[in-house]
Image 1: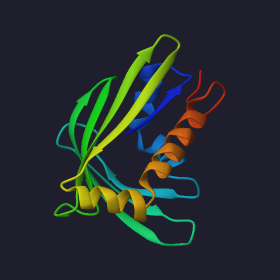
Image 2: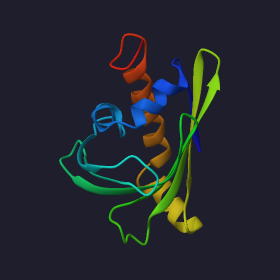
Image 3: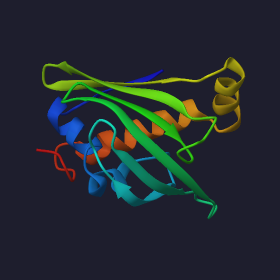
Image 4: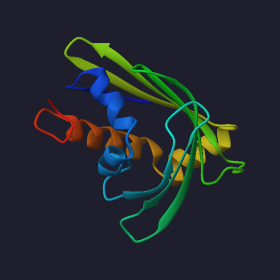
Length: 147
């Protein structure tokens, strides 16, 4: 679980998750970029994209949205392809804190070993923290979505 308080209204944070143009500007750890192939933001909809690593490695990604509750929650199944046996469930919780918004990312893996590999090998916690920092920068006052 990773959390960050962001200086923005919850609806602005939610909008940054629901538009592929915005996602392409902040999604992923530092040095990564994405190319979206398809995007259908609704329960049952799919987002297919490629993450491009700073070393030139491409990582296919596939997301099925399981639940969308505007503007407080997004639940998704995330893997590298539709039949990925290593796919995991993630919840993005967006909580109103007055003039700020708390964003919490929580992922549930099928096994402890899978979770440990993602945390240790892929440095998922650090990557999630960097991703939320990029989101905060994207929507800060004066940023692309900031008011």
